[in-house]
Each structure stands twice: as C-alpha cells, then as structure tokens.
Length: 341
Image 1: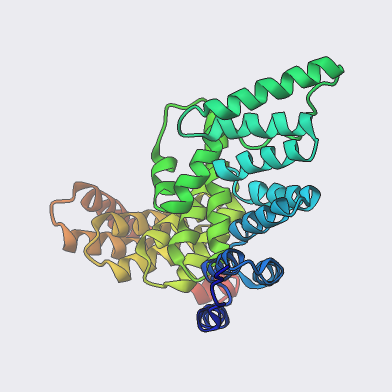
Image 2: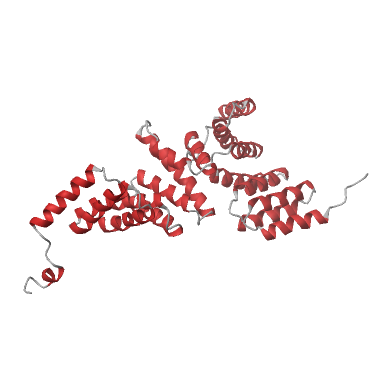
C-alpha cells in the first residue's frame, strides 16, 4: 500500500515559525494541526503543551489538545483542557459543545447535559442534534434517579456576547459606556463583561493606550474611581498627547476631590489643543475654586482670545477683575511670615 513520505521540510518550516513567533498561538496551532494530520500525535501533543507555556492566547491550543486526547480515548484529560478553554473564552460555542460531547463519551451524563445546554445557549442557530442529546441525557438521568449536577454558573449569554464583541472590537467599550436604557443589574453585567475582555486584551497588548483608556471609562461607570484613574494615567504614560485621556483624567480627579491633579491635566489639554474654548473655561473654573484668582483670570482671557463672543468667559473675567480691585491678594511672603513684614 502506498504511503506518503513525511515532509520534513514542511515540519521544519512550521517549527521555524514557532521559534520566530513564540507568543503567537496561531504558529503553535498550525504546527500541531499539521503533525496531527501527519499522524505524529505525540509530537502534536508536545507542540501544544509547549505553546501553552509561551503563547499569549492558549484557549485554542487547549481545544486542539483536548481533541487529540479525546481521539485517543483519554476523556478525563480531554475534559480538563476543554473546561479550561471554555472558561477562558465563554462565548465560544465550539468549546462548550465539545466539552459536553467529551463528558458524554466519558460517562459523565449529568455534566454533559449541563455543558450542552450552555452550548445551545451560545449557538447562532438552534442546534437540533445537541437538543436531542440533551433530551437523551435527561431521560437517562431520570431513569437512574440522578439529577443534573449544576456547576457554578458561567456568564450569561448576553455577557458572553459582550465579551466577544469587545475582544474583536475594543472601541465598542466606549459605545457601551454611552448606552442607556438597561436595568441597573443588566448594565453592570454588561460593563463587567466589557472589562473582562479589555483586561485580557491588555495582557496581550500592554502598550496600547486605547485599551487602558477604555478600561478607565468602564471602571468609572462601575464606580471604581481609583482603578479608573490608574488606567487613565497609564494611557497617558504610553501617549502623553492623548487628549481624550487627559480630559478623562480631569473629570476623574474632580470626582476624587483632587483639584490640583485635575488642574495639571487641564493645563495639559490647553497646551495640546490651545483652540479648545471649553478647556480654557474649565481650567478657569478649577483655578478659581482653588482661590488662584489671577491664574483663573488669565485662563478666561485665553478663552476670549479663542472666542471673543463667549459670554461666560467675559462674565467670569469681569467678576474676577472686580474682586481683584476690591480686595487685592496678599503677597505670599506677607502671609508666610504672619504679616510682620
């Protein structure tokens, strides 16, 4: 019988890609899949296990490794890896489906029914074959008098869909923050799902300021002010010219009751965007609230330079100038020495 020769050249090219891109899960998966098709199951297992130690995304590697274990009849090992993959990416229908099938093959009927129910909830279209398996499993459990063992609940389908959406399109996090109309409990679930997705993305891409900005917006909505500030500052550390992150930091520090830091960031906004009228007005308000009257007046003058028709800036400036004439500020040296000089 004719047999194909093993293509060592292809294997070496695939291994070279793994060496060149050790953090790319696609490289490990492609090598393992090729080795599996070539019948080199032991080497495929080794490639996948090595990939789990170095790749940034491991769910797909665990999934393929589980299928290899299942093909060899090692259902306990297959279930362990599939359970990890499903926990890492709860929105993936394939992971929940294969977990349920492996559990059924291993004689774990109650667990299989629960996993297949989860898969049905995630399926884009009603999977008739899985529904039949669930009914068969339920009938078997009823005959044996055994109930379905409920595992700790995974994220609901909506949360899983939100995680998948933000993972594929991180900019969607900002739209979720702006959306309204949900009940409080549903909105918090949505925001937490978006936060989980952003955190996973940041683990893979820690130098992307937009991800930290999105995480800051989500944390603010969840009432986690310190975490929101930390994420906004991280975005600015990565990109000091990130104007939207500067504005976000101003708002967050105002909420925290830290006008000094809010003022610092607001000054940064006016330097980055000197033609933004609102930034000068906001800086004037912050300075006025701290009693820095002359600095506040200067900010309102700059606002009028941007738009001479701004009535708010003109009114605020007139009030400050009148206050300066009526009660000129005491020199700093006089106050510092108790008024004796």
